[in-house]
Length: 395
Image 1 (spheres, rainbow, N blue to C red):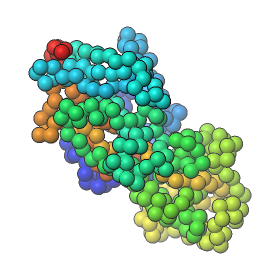
Image 2: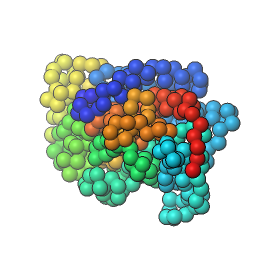
Image 3: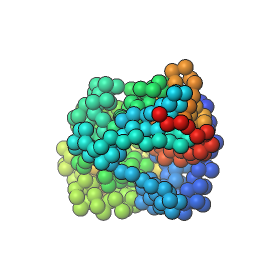
Image 4: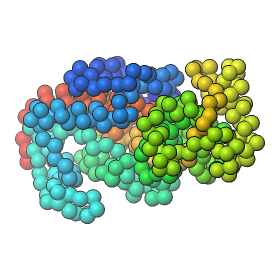
């Protein structure tokens, strides 16, 4: 994580996450009944295969189990609630929230104003701001409305701003991550992006269609791969073979039907479809295969001796890839106890935070699989500590 994060990660937060990750995963199995595929996956930036994947290839399996447990315990989830402010009392402790209930994202100012008191504390878990084009443009002017996002419309900045307004320290807000596996031929994050994430990058190569040549280490971190694609000035083509496609057959079936992924019996046919120089593409694949089979060094630094297979099993599969805003590593500062801290490093009483709304854990670029891990680890810490806080007076 420190390598991918450019050394900007806060060491004390990394240590907490690493030390408590196994316990958090065990909790999802033992307490929530979560199940995972019987394999370890390797995503970009990781040095070994260490990532667990749910049955659906999505975090929704964990979230659904959490929702079911919450409802069983008598908890209530209120949707269409837009938080606008954190409420503090005379002692400057957070004692509740101000929100608009019945809000619709398509109608600014919709919903009725409510104030909700917190008996002991507030845990801020409002996520990132990938869908908030105006705010992300203020951090990085390149990320305007022409750049898509993989996030839902509710990935906006209100929760973060509410914390900043009462003195929370901002951390790494301008570091915004784009997903290099984003499919250029679908909106958001769909089956095409998932196929690229689980099949193309782990087993295949990424090629610039203008040259027919590889442009990056396909196992490098997300930022490195995204930057390489963007530098080309156009969508690039991810390629794998029949063996690699078996990593995610569920997504492949859908993608072939919708045209997001195309199937070819020969590399020449593939090159023709994407306007590539066929001779150069053939040379690229032959050179890659030779290096894999003979254990030779890769010019892009990809560790070809770590379980990779040559691309020699037709049919071949290809997908057009162009990065989309996926994750915002920056957010409010927290300490190792998940307490939100102010500009002087002091905890803001009554306020905890967990997940993408926090900054400092991932640094410049997040590794795949580490977001849910972070949410679980710091969410459990925040919840336990919030439950032990004294009762608060509500103004």
